[in-house]
Every structure is written in C-alpha cells, then in structure tokens.
Image (cartoon, rainbow, N blue to C red; front, side, top):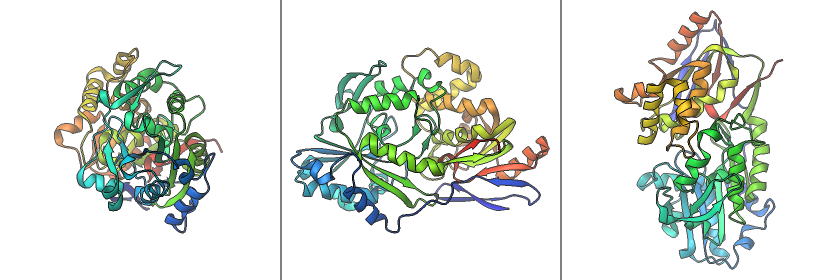
Length: 427
C-alpha cells in the first residue's frame, strides 16, 4: 500500500507491504466552500449572537484583531483584508486598527515570515501589524484574578481596544479540547504569569485536559473565565479540510461562534476505531505545525486511545527549526535526568510552570503507553537525544520491526496527525 504522511511543506511517501493489514484513519470527506472569499463574506453577513461587524464597529476609535502565530495554518489572507475594510468603512480610523500576532510564549514572527503569516500585502501596508510579547510587563493590563485564582494580565493593545476581534482555526487541541476562539486570547496575548499558572501541572494532569474535550476541561474553563473579563469579544472561526481548503467559516460573539464551529468540526475530527493497535504511524501534520519538536508532541498524544499495551508509535516530523525554545530544551533535559515519574513528581506542586515544560509533561502520556519512534531530517545531531524518544532512519523499517516484534500485522496510519482524533470504540 502506498500512502503519504503530511511532512514539512509536502508529504512523506510511505510504502507498506501488501501482506500487512493497514487501517488508514482520516477524517470523512469534508465539504469545501465553492468560493472561500464568498464564504467569508457570507459569514460576516450572518453573525452568530452578534450584529454585523460594521454595526459593531460603528463609533469605535480603536480595534484590535488577533491572529494566531506561524504555528497555525489559519487562512489569514482570506480574512484580514475583508475585516480591515469593514472596520475602515465603519469609521474606525486607520491609525486605531492593530493586527496583533497572538504568540503566547512563542517567538515573534517577523520579516518574510510575518508577510507569509498575514498573507495580504495591503493589510501590512495599511494598518499596524505587531507581535505580542508575554515577557513585557508594561505591555499588559492587570484585570485581576479568575475564581480559580489565575492572575489575568492581557496585552493592553487588545484589552484596551474598543472593538476586540479574534481570528483562528478550530481543530482538536491536546490540552484545551479545541483550538481557536478563547484560546487565541489566553494564552495567545496573555502575560507569562497568566500562561504559566493555567499551564501548570495541576491543570495539565487533569483527565479532562484532553483532545476534543470541553465539558469539565479546566483549561477551557479558565480560558472562558478570562475572555469574560474582557467584556464583548467578536470572533472569526475557520475549519480546514486535509488539503487545507476552507470547509467552514463563521463570525460572531466569541463563545457562541466558537461553540458552533466546534459542533461542525467534531463531526469530522473524531474518528471511531473498533480496535487498538500494536503499531501506529502518524505525522505532526506537516508545515507549519512540524517546524519544531515542541509542536511534534501534539502528534504523539492524539493516537493514545488506540495504542495497545506495548505498542510502537512512529511519528514523522520535519522539525525544520529544531527543538524549540531554550526553556523547552531545559525541560527535556530534566525529563532525561529524572525519568518520566521523577519529572512528573518534580513539577506536581508548582504554582507556576516553567516556560514550555507543559509540553514535556504531555509527552510523558504517550511514553507511558508505547515506545515512541521519531523520523526527522531536521534535528541537529546534538539535539536528537533531547527528544527522549527513539530516532529512526526509515518509517517503513520502523513499522516492519514493530510488526516482527509483536507478531501482529495490523498497522494504523494517521496521515494528518493531530488534526484527527482516533477514539477506540468497540464494534
């Protein structure tokens, strides 16, 4: 069988012998909007729990539009031009409009990368486009604390804007249930102290802090609480199919519109599988998600429900930018030094997480269930050991070795990686 895994800006061919019993796990065919541009216009004309954007913006002196950073393939080129034009036509002064990259604690997006992210030269030339900096104390407004005690400090460019607008991609997220909406606010434009509080071990270890789970998910609940402290927030949500074509778009009040988008995407993203496997192959979803090993962890976590005891999990990720942040490297070094249980014990009582150590905490979940194998061409030799997993030179050879060791010819392949959530459900 010939397959292709999403890898980098293209695909990685995967050729498996015909004698294997291969189950390919992917989303059902999704509807694709015949005209993405017309779909955006229609969404803006049919708001969810809101007025048309031009009415919402009338009389406002300032507006801030949040966009996700380069790690999310949000179709900004389709969204930002129409949104900025609506604001200008509503009378919002050009100097009062800011497009803010919601980096969270990730690095800023600049130069050619920023141009790629925005996707519209007119927007770059017309309004301010800036990056959030979670470590800049003076750049944030202190809004108090949530009922759970999380300090809420948000970028003042967004928190102080008269009109607040969020854009994003709604997809499974291995901690927050689904991405987009309220998540673009926090952690997107939150202060380091806010992020490291609700990304601490006590939140991450909660059984509901998982893919496609919103009810009872402590991260989701904190994000909703933080968004509520801002007052009225509007949102444009998008959903893409496996080929990154626009399948769904809506606009409206941030909570209501995001919930509608979730209802749409969960019909496709959650795929029920009638058995568990000793050999599972997946990807990190290709560019831009597989730019770093840090982001690759999402692909490791998603298939955990279909891993049989003692399984081998093989993941392909380009890691074109290496490991990720220096703080994440430090967390991986602690994992190697302390072991899985020692690492979890060391972070269990922290009020504030160390930056990016939550990704290492999440990596331990699949490591407890399976032996993880990584295929990559992007990591430097000195970084390979920091992954904490087994590096392989060939996905095919890793699959055949797993089949030989287990004696089970059944192999599951998830070409789209973390954008699909396989769930074990007995036939």
